[in-house]
Amino acid sequence: MNDSQPARRAPIIPALLSALIPGLGQGFLRRGYRAIAIFLSVLVVTGVVAWFGKPLWYIAPAGMWLWNVWDAAWLASQGRSPSIIIPMLFGLAAAYGIGWQVVQIDFASASLERALIVAEPMLQPDFFEPRRELNSMKVPVSVPCPLSGTAPKAYNELDGKTASVIPDCASPSENLTVTVTGMWPNTDTQIWWETAIGDHMMISPDEKSVLVARTDAAGSLTVTTHVPTFVLIAQPDPTLSLVHKVHFDQYRRLGGYQLSVNGGYVVEGMYQTVTMALISTTLAVLLAIPLSFLAARNLMSGNPVTFAIYLIVRTILNIVRSIEALIIAIIFVVIVGLGPFAGVLAMAVHSVAALGKLYSEVIEGIDPGPIEAIRATGANWLQVVRYGVIPQIVPPFTAFTIYRWDINIRASTIIGFVGGGGIGFYLVEWIRINDLHGVSAAFIAIAIVVMLLDFISAKVRERLV
Image 1 (cartoon, helix red, strand yellow):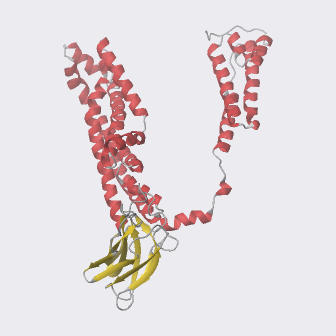
Image 2 (cartoon, one colour):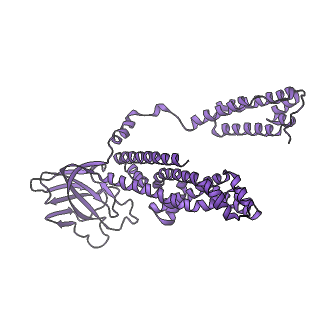
Image 3 (cartoon, one colour):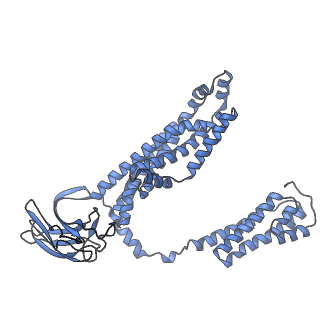
């Protein structure tokens, strides 16, 4: 197909051909690329409209078809191509119009009441709590009752405190009478449930909050409650009788403030996040630097063997780089298990591909003069790299490395959502149990750390580049 400028001719035949099949008239006028582009554009827009079943937007392919007829006639009579702005506007109008409906944008569905339900606890991040002394007691109870024999007695005695449950065993939703003695007198006591696998559950009537009861003057209380409804949901064999626990917790103010439990998780999670990013970036640099030299065309095009190596390495880097780190993390979670190690490996693999690509492009963009001069002296490949390449690439390599560490800090937050460790691991748990105070604390910590490291890395890059 030849896109050379056609001579002027009568417009009727090209117009009729384009009216029959979009782009056919342009092809008749030997404007092959334009003909293919018009045909595919009309075909794609028509297909999208038909797929999503929005009849109103058939105006877009119809408008493009009419423009295509006019374009063929104009091209034949004037010998030059008109602007393609009109069909582009029709295509964009269909894309945005259908897209608006497909993604179901409806601002009227927004609820201020629901927004406040989320926003109010988010304004109270769970970083710190008043310093307090804990007085606790717990008692085992079997759920469900054993199929044969009798359940162990639901009784515990420790440091002058006793706790008991009647009956000794029960099934989900069945009532229990729990008693504790020897606690602090006249003090509110939080009563909650711990499953056999360590999950915490609420045993208030609605099972959405902690059950609170007040001890008498002797430090005793008796409450009728029930086994949580979903206490066996994570148990592989619901008929197997396992030991659960009922906890009694009392708190007494000591003055001042301390890091809360969630605050401690936030600090630990952010430390893991920063460390994961640092270690994964370091591992990536160690692998990406040698690969980048093999992926640089100006260094590897000297003979067919090195050029083949260049093509293989560059292809591998492009393939790995196209896979999101989150997907790689899911794979490593299966291979090595939950935890930060899986996240480190995932980010390291993705960073090797990303840094290898960036490093190789830096190498390809260096001044060829020193390389040619060193080659002219008869130097081998390693000597060319040592004296002609490395002095030119150290500053940009360092800048790209710091920038990648910055990216990995953000990535490690998301990788935690699939079990890759870091603050994201805690964040997804708080979201799951609707602990918005903990979610807010995590958001604030992430924002502070990211902004701080972004500022530091920017200053470092300014000095290096």
